Length: 226
Length: 226
DNA sequence: CGTGTATTTGAACCGCCTCAATCCCTGTGG
DNA sequence: CCACAGGGATTGAGGCGGTTCAAATACACG
Image (cartoon, each protein chain N blue to C red):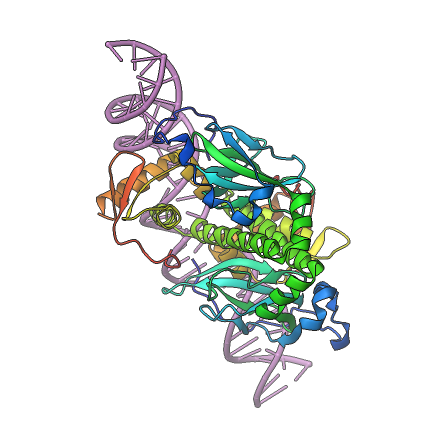
């Protein structure tokens, strides 16, 4: 596993006009309750062990939710893209930490107490939260499927397919919001293996690279064909 | 991976008096909506691809939620014990199938449409559903953590610890509701490796076996110390 | 007591991890 | 404008762990 955690090799993210932050990713219904904050890359949004008093929604950019173990090894539980919620838990404290991955990541936070109260009086809000929770469930299930896949190239291929589906894109090429290290820690394999897997996929014609983070995916498989 | 799927080596489950089924595992609030059914071992409760019109809650026994891939390999997404819900999705069809693991497993099913309507008019019901969804999220996150663990003995150890926490038990010994094949498919390793891992754990004094399915766990680690 | 399945063990092979070195890309300072 | 520095990405070599194939053992049921 990977010891590499901090990093500041930013800048692959294209500059974005400040006013073009599409708040649309966060639920319109919850807008009155949202406190939107801007986060620099690799900043800790949520500390492992903090009280679970808030819920969060990625507005733009990307985040990772992860656990750092005593020995320094990092396990990424979830990669969060615009519209994805996190912080849902029944525990009193957060089991996992969360950081911004992309520079200028905007995250909405909501007071859990406040939102629960709002949900009690407005069924539409309750539905909205429920749906976001269900989406989280689906996302985690997909992740389990991918991590459980046998070979490294298959894992990476599945990961790329997932990103292709989740990132807004017209064609079949994506700009990865994450580093090789993130991919490695998410898939539970080493960085080197990620690279080799990408090389294999490239050689077999499954993908094409236009720069390390720009991937074109050919004949993407169906989601459940992980 | 494992080709082994069907099986009928039942009977390790101790006989249970019919009337002692603790309905308490299913939410009391939802009782008016519950349709409780009894399932024999390995019976398909929910078919992969079926319409997602119902939600489910294990009342007693155990279930597995899994995906069978075209090549016959099976991936277990979630092992469900009494009180655990499944079927939560935003999709129109179920991505995964679900089967009973234990003989005489009782499962409550709820019409999604009906329950959503009930949730709209009763905030308490909405909260109940939300909480069960959050529990599902926590369960899946734990699972991801375990699957992402590096070595096979660690995976198995973490799995056993999870079971110890989730199964109702007074001391530190459990009766596994699942076969080695189930463990293997859940952890994404081969059956043989599961066996060897168990042998290793036994030899190192971490566990003690009293029969293949009866495991006593010494010095169980904390949940996040996977 | 025999049959069928679950579980366990053995041996050989292959893939992934580790340790290292190199290349690449970006930003900085001269 | 160019050289340098620093972190990311890639590639190579060797060792270990897990898979696969095969076989033996244990256990429940008829």
